[in-house]
Image 1 (tube, rainbow, N blue to C red):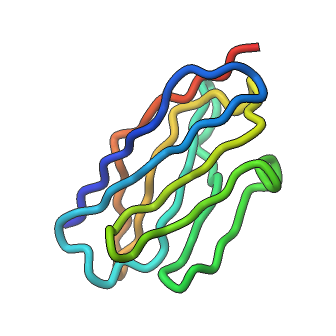
Image 2 (image 1 turned 90 degrees about the vertical axis):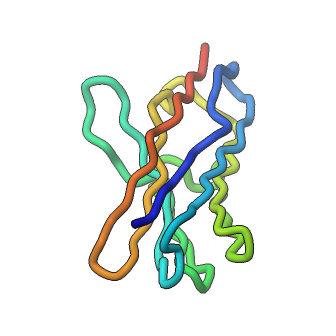
Length: 115
């Protein structure tokens, strides 16, 4: 089992920045891809950004150039630096990890961007 705990969400004005963190614990060896998803009210959960253990990244088109995902393998932590935030970024953000054939989710952290 893998446990994921997110932190760093909150309320910010348009154009502001937030940094989300996700700490993994438990059976963390062989965790490959980690990432961030988000779900806005009335919408499906969508991928925001992902990063492999080797550091390869991918981003949703809507956040390219504004968000940066990074990973500290020594701390088993993944980060999401969010800059130039927009009201449409408002959502619950979930951390995600893949280990072998299993997928794990954090409890989510709310990000609200006011206009």
